[in-house]
Image (cartoon, rainbow, N blue to C red; front, side, top):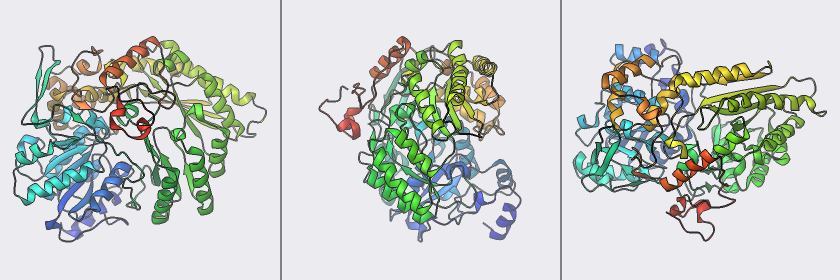
Length: 619
């Protein structure tokens, strides 16, 4: 690549720092021709990808290997992609600026269904055939991991290998196997057959799917010695798991430009809409000492002045008090602000409030998810109105005036009364503020309602549920807006059009592969961004392929139907998910994992919270 011409081209686009490379913390290695070259691709913009902790962990893990050089690749923004195509610049990695086509393994992080067309666009921009069947050599092996791989089928025709579950160990096993087969000059077919024997690796070309006349799956059969089921991988001991002591420091502002400390994986709660809460079972914690040590190392090495704790429910950590005490002391001494997202309303305490207030005083965020107790019970949120008002009262008396509340529209069993209940709950929280004599004086309160559209996801009790139509979701959004009567209550809501496509892709089978390809050819790319999303590209693709999207998103799935993801074993059994779905319809709750084991099946991993006690896995 001509450096002078490249730099000149960078100056013609917005945010050239997205593409320049050379950041502090980047890894460079010599003798690249002797190494396994791994392109770690994030199918979204630099600002999003550089904020993702999983990318940072895998970048560190792979570059700690003597036989591997991992480099970062992000999707170009529209202005730079235009420059690249006009000047015949292939998609390149930031460290070496070598074309992605020069890499042995090309790995994508799939965190959001709306990135699927971007995956194809990145392969195309690199000059690599997008269909796996057209890549015949043991080179440019395309792999994918991340949350979306729990239903990999809509991308099955494009990806050679999916990594199911947590990747720190799995990605190293995959890379070591590749190096062995490359050194021995084996074929791609031989490599794929061997890879399929590694726990957690799914090779879609080794499975045959047949369909009934109505479009449902008749059978899903392994070929060539591949296993019948693919069990996810987990890291059992997070204290000994690899964690980066240094992040690559971005040149331009990113979405989350701060140090991040992961404190545990999984969730004890069992909210019936939450995929992460089921696929990351069992709950495994890092000790308070490990978290404090890793946080200090990261802040000192990067110079970040903000630290965020990462988990699905931060206040559920069993050592939250000693953890916050240690972090509070370190943060105060080093003038570091501490961010505590994902707080639970029902265990928000005065002590926790004092710790937060001593470090920062911004708004607090809670997630009631539903506006009425009936619906909160149906989704197994396991919080009461008393919990909500108690926490908000503590927050207001502690000096807070801004509260953000997360809800969902379109949940199973939802009625208009539940929608109106969201506005009513926000109004009563506002009234609570004014009723307190010890409220903050001289400040106006602010209640923000943030409402997402419910999307039924695989491996949740609601995987069987139908999604509301776009028109119904829009009607509910307008009903909510009409039910809010105070200017101090603000409502934000998501675009129901993208949520509709997301649900189709989340529950789709292999028949969607051609739809994804057609949508890409019709111009779909960076679909998660409103300025790039083209609903007409998707609609045309469905029509061209003769696929009815409502078959996937708009119908309730019988519990005895074969789902496209049923061959994946996450530990939690389908039998358990069915029982939870039935309990949702009855409005019955299930206690959290610390109160009582519900025999979901995750004990088969013999790790974390599921290793405690004498009960055996019921699977």
